[in-house]
Image 1 (cartoon, helix red, strand yellow):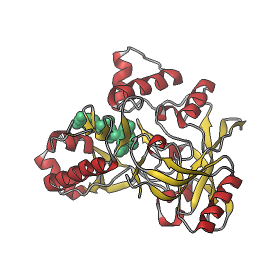
Image 2: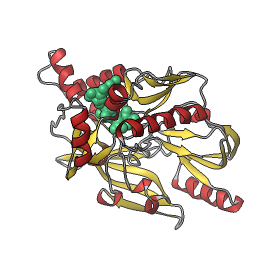
Image 3: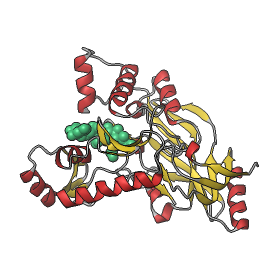
Amino acid sequence: MKIEENISLANLNTFKTGGVARYLIRAHSVDDIKNAVLFAREKNIPFFVLGGGSNILISDQGFSGLVIKIEISEVSWIDKGDFVTALIGAGENWDKFVSLAVEKGFYGAENLSGIPGTVGASPVQNIGAYGAEVGNTILWVEIFDTVALETKKLSNLECQFGYRDSIFKKPEGKNFVITRVCFKLSKETELNTNYSDVKKYFVEKNIKDPTISDLRSAILEIRASKLPDLKKYGTAGSFFKNPIISKKDYEELKKKYPEIVSYEVVGQNDVMKVSLAWILDKICGLRGAREGNIGTYENQPLVIVNFGGGTTTEIENLANRIISTVKEKTGIIIEQEVQKLK
Ligand code: EPU
């Protein structure tokens, strides 16, 4: 096992900011993770688990502990009759897995096309887009418990999936490192084209009976038109979650802003999810707000962009300005979606 020292973390995350990691280990197996954890214990330093680095904000001061970068690879498909299972290593690229599933005609992941990051990171924040959430296709998640030093399987229910949430974000899951994810994909045609941008796309293109590959192409095109190109800019996508507020607060807001975009939350009748992109744009005037090298994206103000040469401190400054403006104008306290490494 190779232990790298004083490694720049800016090259390992999509914001392209942040300082240096004292140590870095690339884990290709569960054994590598175990040895990495033992190394951190022996040195008495903290460790941090990194996937594709596409949803993380790393301090400019770097990290004085050990970064364990998950690079476990595996792709295996098992035919179960009506459906297939896909057992995927945590280090595999998420979109590579989606494109393989689409190619094979297995349904369930196509709406999540084009999301950056690794398969192992996908359950952590229960990645979601265009009417789908990864939690709906996951059968179980294999984890390595860094305290008990053993692997375990968590059922879908045990993962406690919610909106951009799971056990892996909670104290009870903080010792778990995801090593493999088992997906259940359908062999029957089951396309979800209800999301408004998707519907609009197919009407405009005059595609009446889209195939799974049409849907993937649609999603990739819509994403490209709304979200910044990672090859050009630094970003971690949506920086904040869409706030979930009480129906009472929602009614008040709606009185003031009748056009506000909102969504029902499945299984929760007393709350509403409101579009923060809409609030930032129409109420706060923060669409395309710019502070030096950092700004909100013109086509999607929920996305913070490093236009080049920006720092984590600058990102945090703009984020704080957004938090206080939203609070002042709407009373809503917004939550960060992007994870922090301090
Ligand atoms: N809007 C504006 N002004 C704008 C842009 C958008 O008012 O400049 C309004 C529009 O009314 C639009 C609404 O905002 O209908 C919602 O925008 P969008 O459909 O782009 O989705 P979102 O709710 O802002 C969420 C996810 C995205 C995901 C999209 C598509 C969160 C925090 N974000 O964004 O996920 O791609 O839906 O399903 O839930 C990510 O997590 O990194 C991410 C990009």
